[in-house]
Image (cartoon, rainbow, N blue to C red; front, top):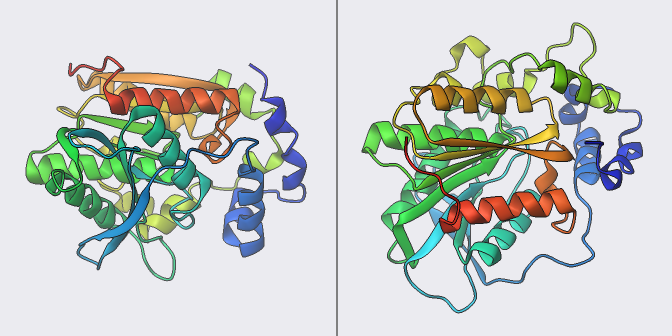
Length: 323
């Protein structure tokens, strides 16, 4: 379907930016990307109780923010959630983190634990953000009772870079501890060190976007991955880039892609690989939206639908059975 008109109306905010490398590589460019991605809603996100805590990790404490349904309770479902930002931006207050957590908490009646992993800046690189994410998920699992969570109903998910990190964490916890969450939610994430070629349908969709989202001929578009890895893409393993991992035996997974998103090719290929590995997987294409749509208000109909789907998975209402 066409790009949602409310999103297309914001394209002038990107005027003058010609490449994502430029946008993510300068403070001004990154700030303009954030202004484009996020705007204030007519109706604020739900008000739910929150508190900050920290999970112990190998690189020091990992800050987390805990969102709880009104009224408290025990044996509640849980989502451990990680925001995106190209591995080098984002925090617990960004809309993709805070708004998503509030919406899923209210819609699913679930505890949401949002993870403030270390960013790949100032010399930090893989495996540090990965280790932080593993530590946060482990902490939630090991403290389920104290958090009022049903230990058998812990879902794990993230958006963009956060989808990569949470998928890598699930692989690590399966291999290290023999543990899997109830479900995984992979939202417009990157699973490959080099994004697979776009299908003809995706290439046609991308041609409708501002030049910023189409790398100039000859320009590599894997600079964020190289920055995260701290070295060449050939150094990636299956925990850094989940499509390289052994996928057999993973938990049921929902892959949510944006229609107008270069990373859709990675999500589609990851979903196909999960299916070939015998994993229960469902792939959903959210129409009319671009990458990072969870930074946008839930009143935008496609965004609200995406949040409903995440909440259904977390609450256990969506039928996702192990293959």
